[in-house]
Length: 497
Image 1 (cartoon, rainbow, N blue to C red):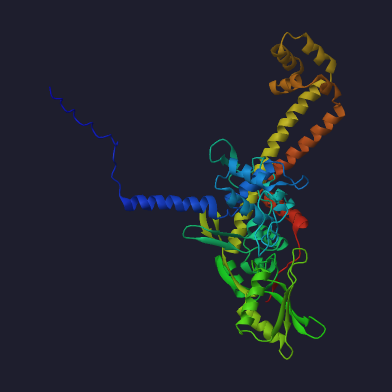
Image 2: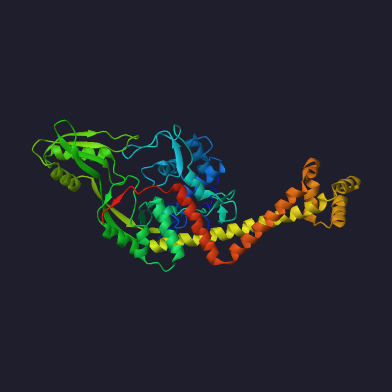
């Protein structure tokens, strides 16, 4: 009997197919990607001047207790904590961000206190397993008070923790340290400034909300780069402060001097921002070799991490060192152009801002921070005052309190007895019941009276502060000036006016 062939199995189900328009899908997906890059990675927030990765590093280091008075820990440990809890974008990106915050030639006010080889303008840092880090004193002003309901928190990437959307930032970090970042369709490039000058301009705007750019620039005349140098084109600075975009030139600091017993030459002590000595020496050597610059007999690089930049260019006999210097400015990185593009996030949206608006966004942020902090501290003081008032009622007859508690059948009975006998609230009664007996008997009425007086005084001061916007603005200014006393340093970059 012949075998019958069975029917082939039906094709596997491929589910429901949805036709979509490719143009529409690409457009929507690209917009989502672009927004993610702009908001989550590339651009700083105008309030604290930080990108998400920098904010997460500082916040996590604060959570780890890596304060300036504590010891350094391996950078790899910090990177691991940040990557595992807040920033799952790769250890290289996190370490690069940490390194930059520790480099005194990149930041006008360093936020990380690094120990080990954190690189130079000509060489990269050592691997994260070799370097160590902790928070610098300036970083505390950025992260402190974030636990006093001063800023909003959001869930981290996996929803298991909370992270701040912005930090309190008691210093105008965006203007002080500048920022660079390339997003999709836009980029930011902001110059660092002098701490004291930025604070002076901010306080001037607080006191004079209608201040003009000219009056602000009396306090903040221009950028102040950590590597010094000379700004020779101030018109570009004015344009950048007016519109948020502008360019100017930075020159190396150099002078003609006797460099040996018989020879004159050029001594270079400062270079434009982000230009390393090796790059300059190599360029000069190439120009001499190609005979594009005449009259140079030797180039000696004496630069080091301890003494800073020092390049000696020896001039041949019979050549004018001033003319050689002019050619060096023209043909080498000893003169560079710096373009300002002041783009930062305001309410989650990228915006190009002039100087006054940048300062105003920061002032508004600090007003909000101090308002929220004051409300938090007032409520905490009221809660403590309520407890102290209960203790004062109980301390009058401590023996009766102890006797009542011992005679009670259970906690509930003791609580009700305390509430009815001493006219206490449930919160006050619970606090007394939860205290060890040794603490309860050690309370002094004089100490409690003094604490009650201080708490009432504090609450009254906070109420007065919160009632008046002018008082809050004055508090912002006062706190800024206090920070200025701690961190202000002399200007390093010379301005030709």
